Length: 290
Image (cartoon, rainbow, N blue to C red; front, side, top):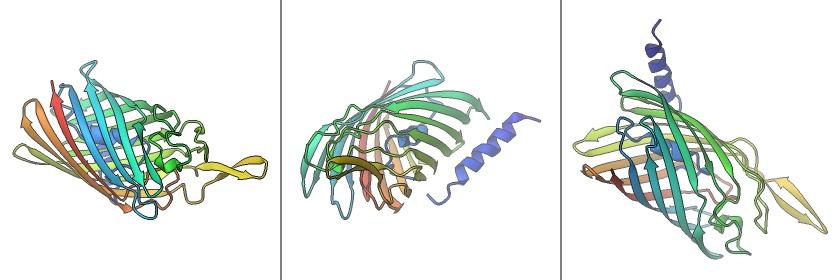
């Protein structure tokens, strides 16, 4: 029995299984895999990108997020990609403003199989979100205002591209409790699944999709009682998110492209203890390939 029909069947199931949801990822980093997995894997080019992103937490926090990401997608080997993301953010809300370097994300992606005239492929990913952002950038403001999560996380994933479909799953292992002066947050791990479909028209590609994010364990935070400190679970923090998004990539020339990204939650988060909740996200990017 040929392995290729079996692999194609597995990829179709991966693409169709999360039929309720994708999109803006208000996770702690693993959704980086889903966004880059949508890229054309048949190309061996390298990419430099600058992204501006606007986000809003919605009620009740009413936080506004402005961030600029410098990104590089490098090809150390023909079937490998190294993705590096350096974020800078500014957060504003009713209680004040903070800004600074965010948490650097580094992902290694390895293609392990390609078949069907090279239109179909299977990749695995491994990476980290590094605690380069300051979880105490503005002492006295809640954790939701800080530019960094304050923990080193491990990200593992796998993705599949089948013709115009892309799907995959990832697990983000949250690091140790952070040193935020108010709550010393310990986040739970995350499981992410996504699927998207690409439609092309001339030099423009449209990719609507869904993402499901589930926090595995509840986060825990510092509760001060008298002279003793105790860490207690945050109610409602092990929540399920369903996000809907569309990505529009336009080829300006053989070496220059632009990208628009918009996302809303179909099932939003209720608890925003870590500052990752978004009610809307809009992103504009300029990409240079070489």
